[in-house]
Image (cartoon, rainbow, N blue to C red):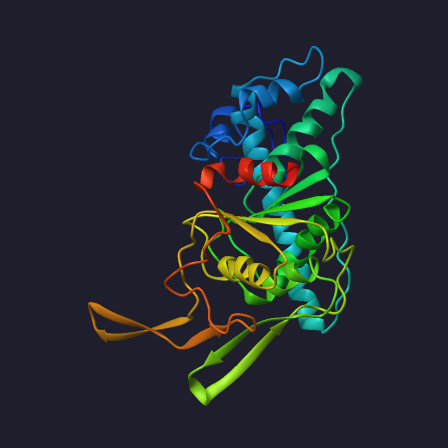
Length: 325
């Protein structure tokens, strides 16, 4: 890709999506490049940008917004596409080959600010919604934010395993589910497997059709290192926490493995399906229900009730205070 600030097209390039020859390179005017992320909020504050830039680097918020935010999104699309391709290929071939890392190199002369660019891209990429947020807080406490969903393991297993392995040596863990809208129950079991020492029954789904009972258990083995089943875990919840994210919080709470901090969740434990009964009317009816092996019930309608109630925006500070004692 050509320099983002360049505006004059060269022979054999593509300008604004138009093909001119066989060149694989694309030249985009800076204004057009900046417009690619015009509707995307910048996830960094000005104070954070100041901390990231090196001595003498003229990096400002406008340059981050217009140049590096679109670049980070394009890189994330490439990395996500590679992960999807690997998962699809492995499924097609019937193998579980380990994916190679997606490596991003920053090149240039000594004085071009490569270190600043590398630090900036690392922060931007870490804050896209596809990436679990991992942060080391005070006192050896790790924060792991899972949002916006618990995606299927076919393409989320690797980043989740990396994030969970990264926090394995922390003294305490805060699992932030305040912005998680649900997802795949298998991913719930995958995450719980890193937080428990022994294989554990987490949940049973009772389906109406066929009167079927499907149990969910933690995995006997996980890629990477476990956080383990003895160190403190606090789960942050709020009114946006829903479905599979609620199950994750509820499972850990009922097992006595985690303290839930924040607000009650939305209360969706029963899988539903929709039937069209009229061109302008659809009936949505529960087809199964979750049964927790400890409580014998679930969080349908009530939500997951926090052990330590507080406003969701204050939950992180409250959890840190609990850890500090």
